[in-house]
Image (tube, rainbow, N blue to C red):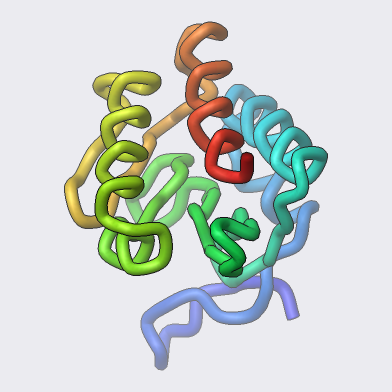
Amino acid sequence: MPSHFDPAKKCRVGTMDEAQFEAECDQENLAYFRRLISTWTQTGGSLKWGAGGISLRGKIDDKDVAVCFVAPAYAGKKDRIELACATLAKQIGEKRSSQLKNDLREAAADRVAGTSMISIIQPGSLPQNAQKKLTKVFIDLLQ
């Protein structure tokens, strides 16, 4: 079933697919998301579709880790990449998680919002060199 808002549950339900994801994304961000997803899978990462977008998953230190969630605009939020920092810290360690947050802030600067839940907002509108740095930050986790 395609992803949709369920008024009784007050959230999205179902599973988004690639066509719905592309239809809901801003074209500039979609171009970046396509490059990130392609690079992610070519480097050995995997994907899992959910109600609101796609999870980038990977094998890190022999653990299956949901690294981030890539989501189109919805409910007042813009196109974004989200990371649950507390969960990541438990899976990859506090030191590595802190380094990841620092690297994300360095790559995406003022597009990074939040502390325990980080959002990288409108990454497709970053300059090309910043987009490449941002992608490298994620890919480095898999290596």
